[in-house]
Amino acid sequence: MVSLDRELKVALRTGSIVLGSREVLKLISVGKGKLVIVASNCPELVKEQIEYYAKLSGIPIYHAPYTNMEIGEMCQRKHSISSLLVLEEGESEILKLVEQ
Picture (spheres, helix red, strand yellow):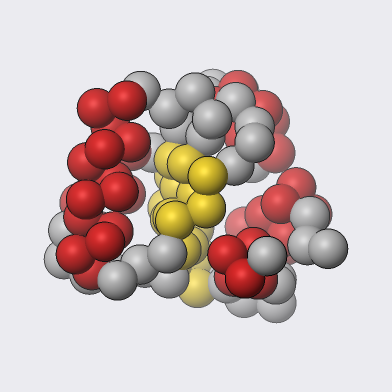
């Protein structure tokens, strides 16, 4: 089983990740990215917008069972992160999250 915590740390170190809903929406609306990860307590309006643009762009979404504060801690940030976008997975296996 793939662990979001472990794979996210590897992806941050070796790949390319965009943090924050505004940046995620900007990029997925033009079809960039391989995987969107959304926190369990992401604001409903933001979640709906992300789901809409991700569906149009064919980008898979992983609804994480973690809050935005927990995801912020996983990314080693001192603030909350409601959503993030994997541009390049690097050496991680984070894309396997959507296969489960």
